[in-house]
Length: 413
Image (cartoon, rainbow, N blue to C red; front, side):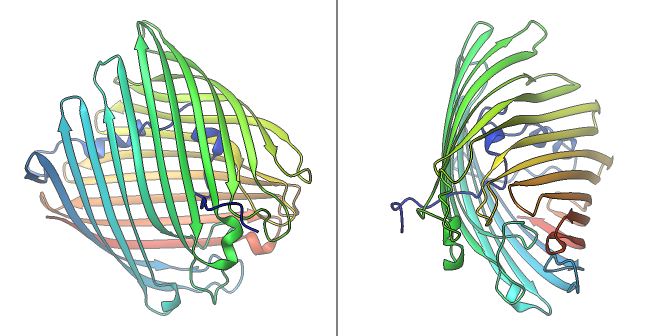
């Protein structure tokens, strides 16, 4: 039986608690914007095309990849080569303190020996924000994505003979901050929906609504301490999942933490707190837990940057027998300008997906990735990447190990 027309969001593959936690909702990650990989480079800078005050940034990327375990299985792995074409178009507009940006993309995948895995993904996102020293700032986002579910997703249900699952993701968020002296207050809210195109996954269709209020105080050293309260509501489209359980849940919690938005060496945010997940179904017990969120950037030299991200919190699941799921993840990476026209990135990560009340127990995943990009000029670059992933689990079905290697070329018009 359906519970209305609202069609669900983003599967909380990421953390509910943290999505509202120390990051304050709609703010962009600091590390990515200020990475040494994005610094000006004489003779290699690309500024796009100016059209009526709007900066247009079109580009196309082609890559070929080798995957030694296409279906992320624990036995009898199947390898394959695939080819990807990704056109993208970005639009930028600045009018006074107002920044507008729109990002559009499509991704076409073809496989040499398993055409059933061929897919097309696409999406668009509109963002607006105000910055500077204004006492009042806001940020907003509207987005749509046709996503393709990863074969390594622990919630995925598609078998090797099934095509990969397609998901329509809709989202929007808004935040407003007012600063008075050394104090500030920020109110943020978001709504997201996920609609799985395959009827076999319709019990995963979900709407997520979030809201948070944060109060902060800035010290003379530019270090800012904050406290925050939030509420998160998950509302599945079906009254019960295919195992007969109502998975609708309301999570409330509070975080305390510190952040630093400016500084030559160290900046970022880190917070922790407690949450209380309250399922609607009497068959599922409420539970409390520790939530952690961190996004820190250390810049020991102008051309070197170290990024650290951590998170822990309650995540949605429809797995039969599971009363809940808690995800913990840690990732550390280094962005490095090796030479004026040679850029590198190395990252390693660890995640622990804990299924409460389920024989699946913990799914522990380690991954490492290295990327190199050679800038041939203002518009053309060559790149290569390699990724290794290993997941350990109690059940053999959940284990896998895979390596993916890729080569590609990127052209900016």
